[in-house]
Amino acid sequence: MNKLYSILLAPLVLTALLLSGCTPKSSQEATGPEVAGGSSSAASAESLSFQGVDLEGNAVSSDILSQSKLTMINVWATYCNPCLSEMPGLGELAAEYNGEEFQIIGIVSDVMEGSDQDLVESLVQQTGANYTHLLLNESIYYALLTDVSAVPTTFFLDENGAVLDTVVGALEKSAWEETINGLLEGL
Image 1 (cartoon, rainbow, N blue to C red):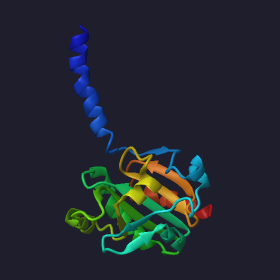
Image 2 (image 1 turned 90 degrees about the vertical axis):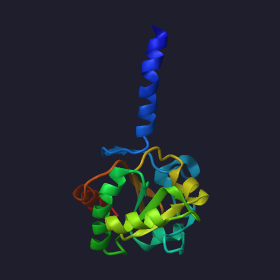
Image 3 (image 1 turned 180 degrees about the vertical axis):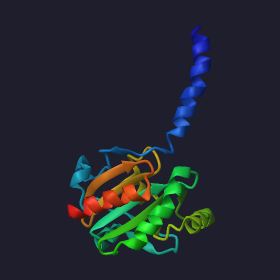
Image 4 (image 1 turned 45 degrees about the vertical axis):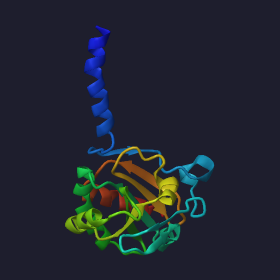
């Protein structure tokens, strides 16, 4: 009987693990990227330090956070349908807000810096997600992604690099807009 349970349970566990990498439902978690001191709410630009390259080959560092009062960092993957589904709305939001108030940065979690990025560029163009996208590297991984267990995962940071909120899962444009406006009001 135990052997039968093992045979039936193994595929279910494997399926659950594989599906956990892409979360289609929206849910919020209180955790964010681990930062120095172990407290995501106490993050500062100095403790949240990263360097990377955007899709155009430009060097980008954590200094980019100081360019806006609020930064939305959306971690996505090329295989994730919920990620791709929300990107047109994110592209619209990026265009609707003043860059000094709000900016969006996408982090492509499954394409390493220095690898072929044709698929990423094609997906960004197809979805109209015309905002900065960074390719994964060690610096970005350790600064922001060590606690990310599903995509999409989105962090909201202030201009000093403090994590204000974390959302796991995809949301509609109107829900993102409500979150963004609420966070901007508090800054």
